[in-house]
Figure (cartoon, rainbow over the protein chains, first blue to last red):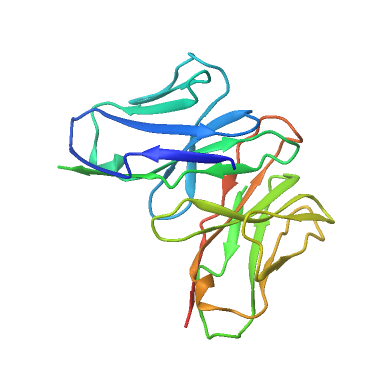
Length: 112
Length: 114
């Protein structure tokens, strides 16, 4: 059975800290791994990773994929209270339909 | 360009009632999806569609039905609401046909079945 596992389930840090969120996966076919940020409503897209070892970066957020070890990490440096959210990892397991398998998410709380 | 829109935002149903959750996208995306998200859980795929007239079951389809008569609209129907269907429902769409694509999400519908 295909699955995506995220850790930790929740994390509380102080502003300015650096955090690393983990996502491991087991799927029969792999096409891409996606990270989403979910605040109060809909998930919003952060990164899509398809190749190992190539870091994607957007401001204080960065992510990298290791297809050999079947995991990805999402780093957030100099955290701010606005980074507080649930971070979802999802894997596109191939096929013609772009179906995504989601992990349960990591709840990040950044305290002032 | 409104993206993916969903109505209603919030609804309370009694057990056994029926309702339709509406989803519309104006990005001309072929692929559309319905997910449910229970507290502390990830998103579970209910149904998806790869184009007008074509739908298929996802991971948790029981108790739901869908139709796709146009590219823009993908309504989700609950025929006999049950407390287990209390959840937040997200509709999403994506563009690519078989390639790597990003799903864009609507704002969600929060459903409470009492």
